[in-house]
Length: 444
Image (tube, rainbow, N blue to C red; front, side, top):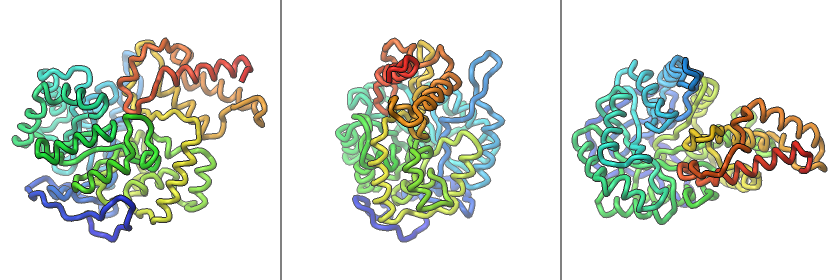
């Protein structure tokens, strides 16, 4: 990381030199405009903006099922590489198992040493030793590589310590991953986290006792989750950051935009941001908030088209940390955001496919958009109620086919255990279904 004078931030110490050994590792070239952070453990020069491969664009395939638009992916990767983005994060669980292969095809057109690959051991459904080991081998094949730069235990914390032990300890996978690290198949071993503070403290204790050395950790961090995280599976990022910072563990950030919600904020909040900086996007404030903290190695963004990719390259190519006053302003906005009746969905699609065909993230996204855009019909006394009512019902039918709408949920709950945000999905679908029915019956 280029040394610069970062502002002092409450609860965050300044970046210090790491005491870990320096080893020979690949060094990815940097576009001169892209903000670069250096991994203090091994000297990796990582672009502050990383490409999250969870939201590649999809198109209908020959059999009617959605497939990744490989041509579009190649084009976006070409632009990303040309503008200094050198960190690519994927998983066997993303996009119904298609993400790794698409990333491998796009990136294999470049020298392997020119980018950093991150993927995960996503053994949620089958954590037997055989299945877990095979998942790692399959990832190598799909990505067309012989090693992973950054390898993660995927989404540990949900279910607490017992689930972690089942997925990684009792099956011998921790020892297996340590062996793979010694062999050079894994360069950096870490984990992504959704869970309680107590569970996170347990994982830190493993590091402190030397049982597992965490080379990096991936956390959900944004100006909402900094102090106002929802649910037992989302600990305040301010706490996670402080614990990792004092141990000098590099941090990779996921969900800096909360699945796009912080790029499409309510009109009142957008107006406040634009009043301060008319030239830059609403999303740029969220990215700058995260990047202000010096322990952050990389910030992942799931850019699904060229427009956000270009916009984000502009933000990180001319990166400006927030001032203390601006950080206080972001906390003020976070408090305001919590007042809106939004579903805390990040559009990760872990809940899919629904066995009854419901487009769960699509339903939530449509509802959230109507709230943030001010087109949410609240009561008959509301100004323009009739217009807003018609607009919601019409746009709902256009966005979500009738057989995939919220009223088809039977409450089986299969989706709940897969949600990293701990959303009570059947309850939220029922709430939206009742809302839609009240609009139709004019009883709101």
